[in-house]
Amino acid sequence: MDTPPNPNDQEPDLSAPGSGPGRLTVSEFWELPGDPAFCPELRHRIRRSLADYPHAVDDAELVVAELFANACHHSVSGDGGKISVTLSALRTGLVLVTVADQGPKADPHTRLPSIPHTRTDTGLLSLGGRGLHLVAALAADWGHWNIDSGGYTVWALFAPPGATRLPDPPLPGSNL
Image 1 (cartoon, helix red, strand yellow):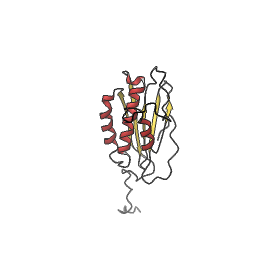
Image 2 (image 1 turned 135 degrees about the horizontal axis):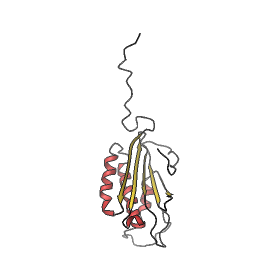
Image 3 (image 1 turned 45 degrees about the vertical axis):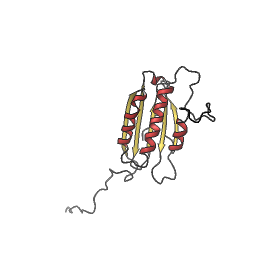
């Protein structure tokens, strides 16, 4: 004999951040022209996509904008090329962003994404040189991958609220 369903035995609502084990709730991919004029649009997309992640939205928006600007300035993507941006967020609150360029400009001063130990300019009001310091300060972890095509992907992780330990950094080509 079938028993009627108990209204107290409802499935949990897994649509809200933090309500389920590691399910992807945000998965975005954008390919934009390597032109700094597209940065405001990208910032808007990040804010809209992370509206349910208030712990990460401001920092992720700023980090993605900095990484996008770096790719425009330091890579061939900024010379009429493309920049790819991904945004992933889990219900646990973990947020991952990546910004991929098409490779370095043919410039002897262009190098792997890294934070310089010392600033090459001494002016406190200089315009450049703070981007990756900002990324390191705002993200729980960050790094870069070399892409087979010669470009770089810079990634940043933002921790869930109350996290005491982050998972290992993502591997190139891995899925959340």
